[in-house]
Length: 66
Image: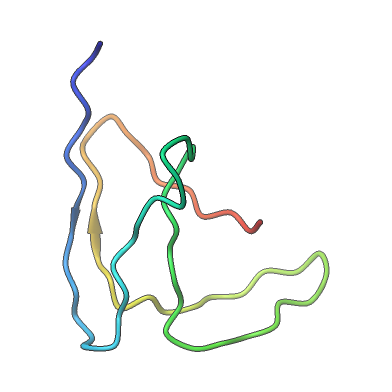
């Protein structure tokens, strides 16, 4: 199996919640916003997480709604 890349995450806000896997078989990590918000249908908006993330060269990060 290939070695997993190391993604570094820092907490810059005390209320920021670190990402976690929802289950053993989850395809990605759960990411949490600092504030609750309702995103209108077919729209996007910025949300703060309080977590700068260092993604390794040659990789990308995506944020998707459920």
